[in-house]
Length: 451
Image 1: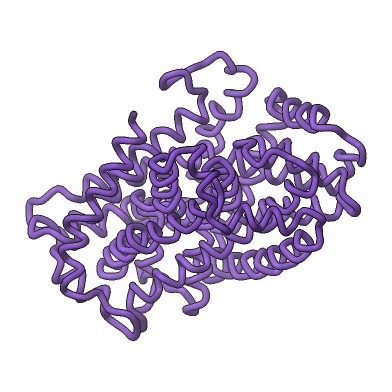
Image 2 (image 1 turned 120 degrees about the vertical axis):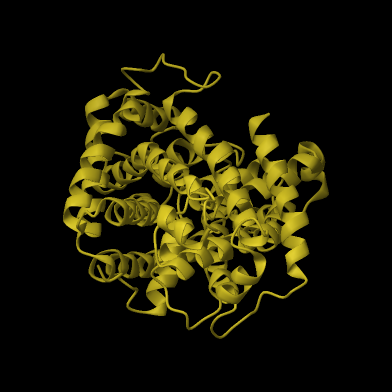
């Protein structure tokens, strides 16, 4: 079967960035900034993103582009005879399935809130307790939770069933273009609010007093974590798009463009949120509740709040759904490559599996609310712990060792593939940085996540 390819360079950039741009950017990033003192966190995040995230991103893309295959077969084509690197390919795909078992539920929450704002569920004058009750009622209703999750899953596989260019690439271009327009509109509106200056100052200007309250070590490790997780590295979510891309441009150049677009959205999310929080005297350190309780309370007390709330959750829906369809593409490509399925059959089987496998997360807030799996974590947090704290850092370390050591594919082969095309090149001296510094940073993240 002839391997599909992206129809354009723009399609590759937008789809890959869409995979990276998700809840980690528009939900986790703003509250991580709020919890870690503001501006200095943002600066450190950018440094770690370029110094640690970008190299691993180029390695995943290199494995995909050189092999023209999904995770397992990609390793098999590049590894030395009798070596077993491809075992990680199966583990990576398990990570993608596990990710979708809870990510689709959270994406469903975004979709639900979009409809709630459009339909007028959030009426002017609601206080924070009333906004909290709306979210609580959503979580407590297993039927409503299941319906929103199912809508996300079914729509996602309908898009993927249309093919790479006519489905994923076409829809991603539309969603990402609309999302970028929405971001600019929402940022402009936030700049007009009364507390815009204070919010932007807290967000972007380093303040040593804020850092002192949190602790510099905590700020550094939090920035390192955010920079690492924002690109969804280590579970072959990016590798698959390398297998579809052209060889016209170097991977460092393409990876940098993905990082810049990913960062642009993350920074803009904060520019939307912090001016609103400071304008309405809302605690910026509200944690995960920031999106589903705190911000709706801000919107309902704002002039034109129904419109701005609707636009904000349309932006959030696009951000989360772009990740869903990108990972779905990886799942069905894995089935097509390894089991000889055609695209339609792979979509149907995976759709049924994800619908069923996502139910424990859905029920974890109602029917199974007393269930605790890892530590004192509920179903969603346990699944997220496995993916975020184990599979992402371990997988990234394996990709790095595969691409830089003589026991794997080797630095020379990786460098040759990464430097094919026009653009920024991987230099010889970078080998030692990749072999010594980056693994240490990843191991720090892994240990910190387990502790």
